[in-house]
Structure formats: C-alpha cells, structure tokens
Image 1: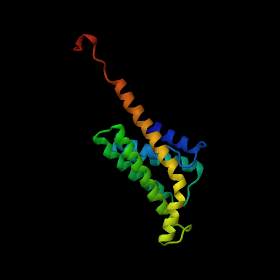
Image 2: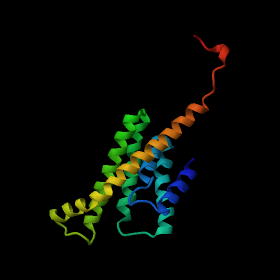
Image 3: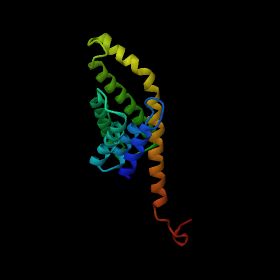
Length: 166
C-alpha cells in the first residue's frame, strides 16, 4: 500500500488540477493514522519528492515538506479511534496547519516585508488557495479512510450461517 500511495500522490500532483487540490495532506494524515509510524511520514514526503523531481523544486519547499511531517504526526491522533467526525476535524486542522506554516515560510522569503504588515499580507494572499486545500484534504481524507475501512470490513472473515445467533 505505501508504494501505491506514493505513486497516486505523485501522479495526482503532476496531472493538471486546481491549485492546492492534491492528496498529499490527506495522505500524510492517513499515513500517520494507519501506516507504521516511520512509513506514515515517509510516504507523503516520497510522493512530494517524486512529483517535485518532475515539476521542479521551489524556494520554501522546506516549509511545505515540514508541514506534511507535522500533518503525519497529527494523524497519529486518529490511531486511538476513527469516526467520520474525527477524520473531518483532523482534516480541517491539517489544512489550517499547512496554511499557517507555508504562508509563514513565504513571509520569511524575499516576497514580503519582514514585519507584521508583511506577515498579514502573506496570510491574506494565501486565502484563495486555502479553500482548495480544505476541499482536497476533506475529499481525499474521506476517500482514503473510507476505502481503507471498507476494504477492512470486506476482508473480515464471514461467520457461517449456522454459527449466527438470532
């Protein structure tokens, strides 16, 4: 499964898509919740690196990669139990985390003045992208967890009819 997620994540970042509508945040959340601890963090980073090798690396990539590490760690909270509400809440938290970290990183770069006004301008400039981040994190998180949990239910051994109690 980790290799499939890496390929899916990389391909969906490379093919045409709306800005910030990609599965990497959801993949980091899912990886933290379901995959073995080290793997859960490495999978989204590998998908990013693979797709960035095609798209090109960019200034400030450290902030993007770092935010996905933290989102993977946030996914660990879902190990204690997953409900649709908890998945939605952590997905929204992941979107906010990504927004705050990456726009802070942009502010530290050469584009914005290094004062409160520049920080504010950086966050304001990120708002149009935030909508797609939230939408993609929700859609992909619900898809990843839904498919995984559905497959797990199908894989459970069926109890023969004679052993069922009524």
